[in-house]
Amino acid sequence: MVQRIRTETVRAVVEPVIVGAGYDLEELAVSRVGRRHVVRVTVDGDNGVGSGVIGDLSRRISTALDEAEESAGEIIPGEYVLEVSSPGVDRPLTEGRHWRRNVGRLVKVRIGEQQVTARISAAGPDEVVLDVTGDRITVPLAELGPGRVQLEFERKDEP
Image 1 (spheres, helix red, strand yellow):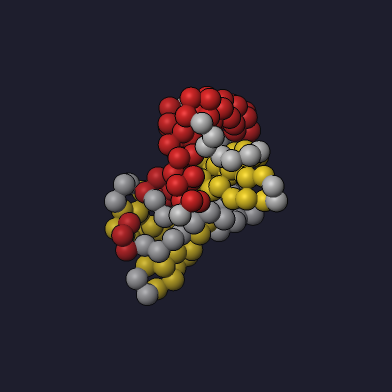
Image 2 (cartoon, rainbow, N blue to C red; image 1 turned 90 degrees about the horizontal axis):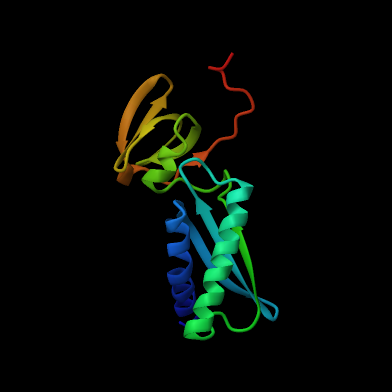
């Protein structure tokens, strides 16, 4: 229970900084490693997140945590390490925004009981349009399992 409260408290400080900068907080984890805590923050945006943005957000988050501790007392006991990153290509596509940000990419996904490999043609908040071997199908987001982007070294539709 202590871990959950700490994570929620950290989230209350971190999330407004990220959202205010125009990005999404994809994941937040607080764990103990030796005598220190590690605060892992994963952010994403519609146009991706470059290293400059990561550095800027890291500074902003660090400042916000310091200010919160000055005004409200210790949020993270003892020393901590802050790690800010963007999601890797192996992150499962589960939210509408994940699918939208990967339009044009090849994915492996379960639709009901069937596993398919398809290209994302379009994506909205509630449905995804997939190109499955030349046939376009529209699937409600709720019927899709987590999608996995497939690495392509050479696309067949590119010259």
